[in-house]
Amino acid sequence: MELAPMRLKNRIYLVGKRAVRNSVAFMTSHPVLSSFLVALGVRVVVAISTGLLHEGTLIGDEGQYLILALMASEGKLTSEFWPGYGQSLFESTRTFMWPLTAVFWLFGPSRIVAQLLVATFGAVTSACAACLAGRFLRREFALGAGLIVAFFPSQILWSTVVLRESLVWAGLAAIAVTVDYSQRSRSHLRTALLTVLLGLLFVATVWLREHSALLALWCLCPALLVGRSRLRVRILTASCLLIVAPWIVGLGPGGSDYARKAMESMGSSRAYMAMSADSSISEEIFDCPALLESQTRGSDEIGEAISRLIDRPRGEWICIHDQSGIGRLVDNRLTTSFRRIPGGLYDTMIRPVPWGGGRGLTQVLAGWESLLWISLYGLAAYGLWVHGKGHRVLVYPTLLLFSLSISGAVTHGNLGTAFRHRGQVCFVLAVLAMAGVQAIVEGRRMKSREGSLGTVSDHEYVDSGER
Image 1 (cartoon, one colour):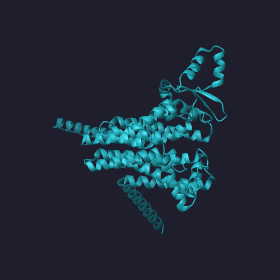
Image 2 (cartoon, rainbow, N blue to C red):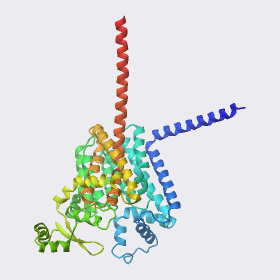
Image 3 (cartoon, one colour):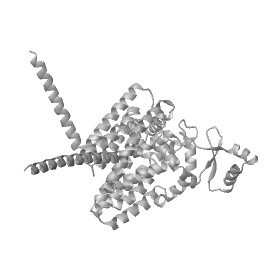
């Protein structure tokens, strides 16, 4: 009688073991689809759970997108609604606002429906990471890259709240996958069609975040030149893409107009983000009236700064005003911005850290996640060192990683914005990190194999000596 329950338990155990084995085998053989489904499932569960446990929005900025989509779906988004801001915000983020408005028009204004839309974009990013890694890694490690994005805490957070972040990631990751297809193309027509697709992805990303889109364009053009064949065609298509695409959206040929304006205002961009921010990155921003007083007291340094403010209409020194109307003197010189890079990289790519004494639960949790980021950096650096020279697919992601990091280092003024924008490079780090993991695993296997061969050789030597 006692054998029946034991047999039943064993049978259940074997069935469960077989189901797990089959699931793992399916996921490994279909890393892109599996990454998408897992990421989507996790995000849907989190979205539903937070909706049940928390009333209202999780992030303050969600409200403006929800209200804009509601007004647009009802045809009430006019110039009188939030004058000077409402329509401008809608137009500048139209790639996100159009589908969000369409969802509200079809299913009614509901935050959970909007969250499901955003979660889908986050799952697409996970799938793109797996697809990119699968181009040069084994399937199990390609799946690992997708699952890193699927389970990374901040990736889950920012793709379950109604913000444009996950769509920005999906755009940058989709560009990476398209660049890889273009690099592998041997057909004139296919290369031309992929170039058009890259142009459309660039325009779509511009209507989400202009500076990220422009950096992506500058990174993808040199990556297109390392294809397998037809260099002349690639030079022509990359040149047309670089010159025409940003010109169409008003950024100037090659993005020159936007780049010039951005380089002249990096200091003020950083200062505006720093003012009145709870997580402001410490920076010396002088009070304009106080500087004038100091000048009258004979301060040579302050006097020189004020004279530059007066004598340089180009804006190297400008006075900006916070919400209280207090004027702040900002150093907009390029040399000053470039000097911020070392400290800025630490602020934007490492901080907050657990031992940094963060204020509030949000910064504490972000600080603990920074340990995961540091782990990714180490593995990604090793993966790039091992695989970087042998795989052209890594050209665009690597350039994008460095360009977004440097631009953030000189422009971000608070840890909140820096931490959120860091998510743009998570898919790149996931791919490179799994490249590092595969290199480590293969290295250990090779060493163990060499050790076993060495042992066999020693036995053979002893046996031959005995004979």
